[in-house]
Length: 284
Image (cartoon, rainbow, N blue to C red):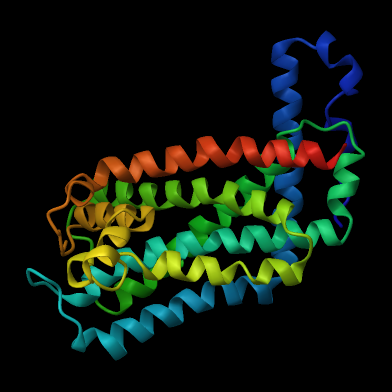
């Protein structure tokens, strides 16, 4: 494990009440930065893992774009590859929570979290530091995916400002799901058990508007897909990118931009406190 600079860690919790509010914020940010720096250092020292994380989405883009692209139709017309790309962006951001969960449970298995628990660090530092590092990696993933999409013919026709907004919504979804990954990583007992979470993550991304419009699915399945947070972000991104949107006429599809903000906010409000609370309970 990378050595941490203990001079910037939080003060003894027994004296925390004596620390001014501004001082508490400083120590919390310092602890968050230490955890972030450690996580980023590990990423830099494990290039093979990074290549795999980035390589799989690229292969998926090429597979669906070239192999299935000519056979798929978009309701209302439009190029399927342009319909697909925002969905692939959203799917990649969603599946990223599994990388977070695996990293957390691996740290727990190596005793890293026990070491953090023995330090007088801010309770929120582990979750916030892990989340910041993963968000940096997610931004890199998104940039590489966008470059790949441009290479196979995808275009963002909605303008620069709208494209920036779309990428912001995609990162917002990833940000919210980081806390799901941290919570699950602290919850499962070992790496083997964490691997089983893919069985949950896979249907979440498939039962969405990523590959097929919900209106083409059976009624009940289409409803599930339409209300999937992945679908809301993918549809909102399509609107902002100026790509084909296969709207089904439901309320949630007509208000995709709103729901692309509401879903991440709701997920964060639920799982960020759960992550911090779970970390605190481990120390009891």
